[in-house]
Image 1: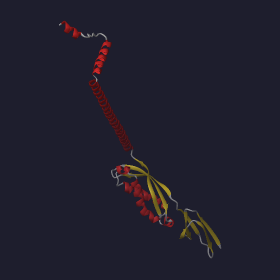
Image 2 (image 1 turned 90 degrees about the vertical axis):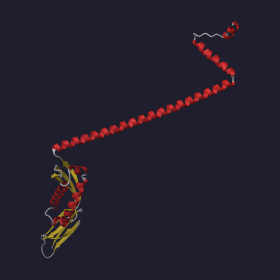
Image 3 (image 1 turned 180 degrees about the vertical axis):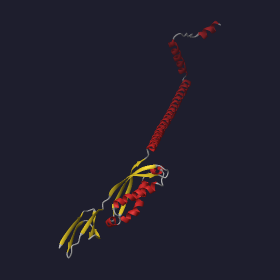
Image 4 (image 1 turned 45 degrees about the vertical axis):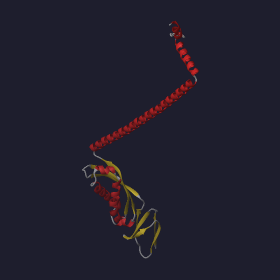
Length: 258
């Protein structure tokens, strides 16, 4: 009697073969087998069930508008059926690599360069959907496919860099123009407000002076003595300047002489 023990780590699955024939998949844990009547050759192939990533490098692709691109994709995948992954294809990793290559080529060949640059997420969705159908046949699910590198021909890179630089300069000019317009608008608003305040102040001063003049006129009308006093104050102010002559009572003297 012979005992065979196999240990399957968590996150993995074991595919049990007896004398070369597939028996079943083994879950994580300890598995013990006994040979009672005859010797049986057992083999266990381990399959990693954890999510993993693979880089699909340097794919030469021609876009719909005849631009040659070199593309690298980062694919995240997971084995969902360990038995199918080992039994249905020679190597599920090689098959996945090929399927992602073809899916990316099929998708990008129908897109222009501008469409590709505008939304790279379209590539991820297209590859995941395309490979999802074929991957189900060998027990692999594509979780995500992201564009890792996108390389253009040298002359195209130069043109794109100039276009990007021109676009940034245009944006900077627009920002500067917007700020200038805001400053001009603010300055105009400030000037308008200042003119309004000055006009209101001048109006209030004029009203105050008018009211004072009216009040003074009323006082002079009610008190004739104040009129004479006001005349004397004016004469005193004129006399303080110098160079003036005053003749008091001249009118009466001239009358007597006549």
